[in-house]
Length: 176
Image 1 (cartoon, one colour):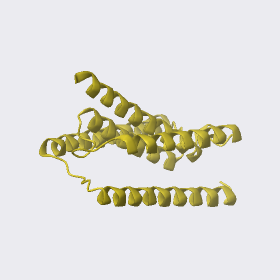
Image 2 (image 1 turned 90 degrees about the vertical axis):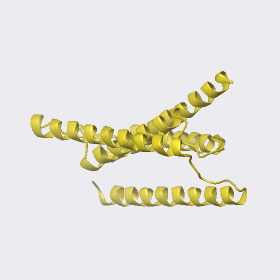
Image 3 (image 1 turned 135 degrees about the vertical axis):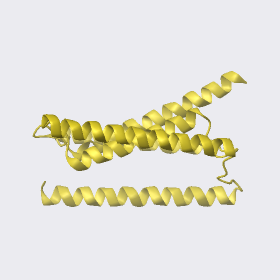
């Protein structure tokens, strides 16, 4: 990896994390000003716990399968950090989707509109960045998936979460 690409990658990650923390801080402030709490009832807490368990199991199975592929077949299809990030996004997606579909993702009286807007922005911006990385030829180098694919993985994971929210909302509208 060249020095410029490495520095750009680190800078991009730092800016991304900082932007995420800033958005979260702004969200919390507006929620507090509007008197919204992030309280979950006992049922939601229990279901969120199950979702965390399933997310952990999904990450564990993914990690073991990837490790087995590398050790048993000497088949390394990704850079190490890339494999780790994909596993993390897998776990986060499993948790979010299961929580959403079991009505345990949003706090009591929580409204998903803000999440939907944020998810659309994250999906669109990461999809555009991912497409630019594909055009630049950074995603696969020497037959291995590189960290340049993380934008596409992020877009895919958040798109799945967005679809889960929309399906859940639709189901709620249909049942009323």
